[in-house]
Length: 623
Ligand SMILES: Nc1ncnc2c1ncn2[C@@H]1O[C@H](COP(=O)(O)OP(=O)(O)OP(=O)(O)O)[C@@H](O)[C@H]1O
Image (cartoon, rainbow, N blue to C red; front, side, top):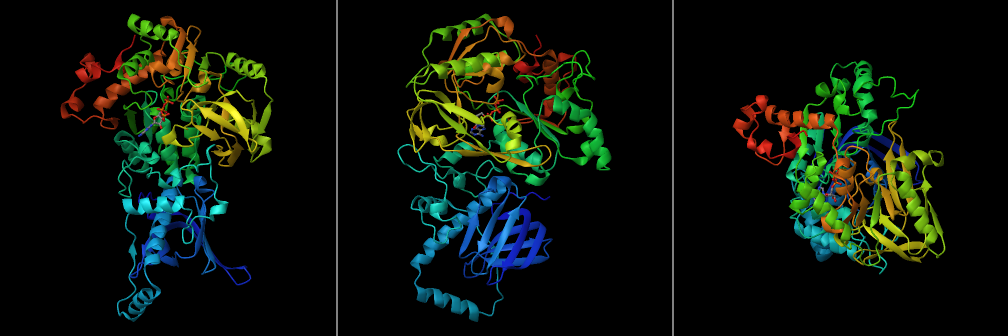
């Protein structure tokens, strides 16, 4: 399917249904590969044009409409045209594109509504009359990009709840998250910039809103463009370089029906690399790798390796070899399947270059006496503020679970249980294994918790923010965060797609007990205030994962540390050494964030004639 990045065009499936006066469906047209375009006529009325193969075209006037966008994240929405008595049902749209398409629609209609208010009825009639009498044929053009002024006006319209001609559902029906002081949650979704561009594709100049922080950087944008042009991609990068952030944007840029999300570095990926790759070619009768299915693989192999069960009779056991193959880059088809590799270089989670240097060194298993000294010096620092205790990161899950249970039991306040609503109650365990949010959440006043959703980036209410339960309001827990912000935690929705393509959903209060986590469970998180004991870590990359959750050395307390427990998997070190070499030798391996230098590309690195720029990078060193 063609990928389009403008916010005024949407590629999706669309069906249009017309009703008669008794609200019975009279006619239905289905467009499997529809192109929806926002257009205007000569008198600036807005229309939705629906076409397929530039042949069949339907134009519907965007006036007196209702937009239903509850399932936008699944690539679905519908627009009801009240005057025409018809509805357009959109499905299989890339969710990111759908959000921006509807956002543009909303902003433009808000602007038109404001302008129409200032034009008298007489003026309007005059305009209409001259249009009808004009001999020119009816002329349509695509609407212009959203401007700053339009954006500002639309924001004000949201705040003042003006909804007369806006495409949003009625204000009373809108889900409004409020903070404990009764302030509405920022309407961030409507104003987040396009996930497909480094700056908003609308030409909206970044301002100081929440959205600006979420724009793809140049490195990330290069990867996005490579994905959109259909290449098989592998992208990597150290902790905090935005791999998960980018992956979410990539997922949002593809139509949901043809997109499956699976484990990236795990055993599943290994198996896929061998057996399923061949099956895919056979089934699809296509000799290209994976039968032509586009692969986008992302991960940092220096972080925790996949957990491999090696019991007798286990399906992973039968092909076990020494050394054990547990990374997807070890599979036979890796070289043939992946056509482009990228490495993200800009670290976002940490700002302090010294801390980043320490982390880079630990990542490859290298610990100097200075690093040990710096880490051990944190044992004495006080990191607790405003009643928020440090989260303890444990090397073993059972230690973390027992800390949380004991601490909760020690609180004297009454217990309150929050049960999730799952779309399929028989699949609760499957949902549990895929989501961070528990099915059953037991809280008490005084419980230390962590937020599991981005609620408001500008006020620091983000995934991973640490807080404490201070009271209940309307039955919902009120959390006070480290920065003293208060927030009423109402149920939020999580949607996951299983490998078979079915969609599962959970609604739950977005909190989790946070006195302690296992290091394995902390993967992927950014944490506020951390305490860890690193003398018992047992796995390659485990110390690196634990330490790299922190944003700075000031927010972490390392109780004990032994250099010998820090190590990297030799196979991973080898992979990255070759990866770096290939980056310099083969144009398909793209070093991001630096200009390609002709000489560098020509220069071969055999005989270890490494260029200075490579020598400076810790990844090429094997201890
Ligand atoms: N382009 C960007 N602009 C602003 N913030 C960004 C950008 N990219 C990523 N971030 C932020 O950086 C932080 C780390 O991102 P993310 O968790 O995606 O990193 P990661 O590479 O997946 O880390 P890890 O490997 O440790 O899981 C997040 O808070 C994310 O919002």
